Length: 130
Image 1 (tube, rainbow, N blue to C red):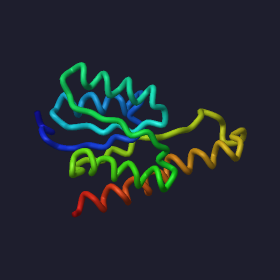
Image 2: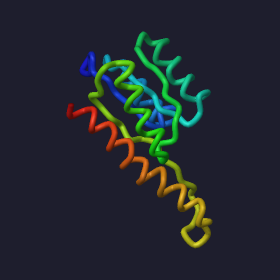
Image 3: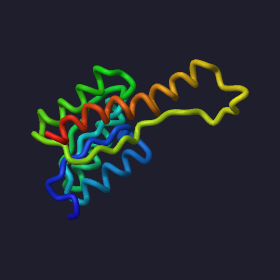
Image 4: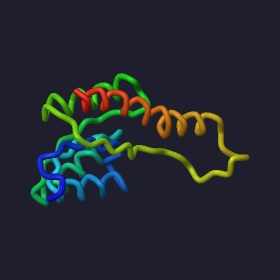
């Protein structure tokens, strides 16, 4: 139980690597807050964590939106009183060739993959250093 009593926020926790990370952290004793854009996917991850005896909650939000990023950090603090670990896992992107990617897809990838890391980190770190 290497993460016993630690509180972790995992963005993009509704599927894939984020879900696997959330489950692993829970098995190691962390209390996990799952961020997902889809409440259905996020609830599935939280349910899986609870099935293995872990503690988890869900915050639905888009990491590329300032208000959502701030709400994620505040939700963690409101639920657990602290934040110890942040996993910036949320990401998006299609496997298109650069010569064929529509500009709006590129903009969305930049917003989620770069701006989202900045926004969530900013609010999370403010809480972590208190």
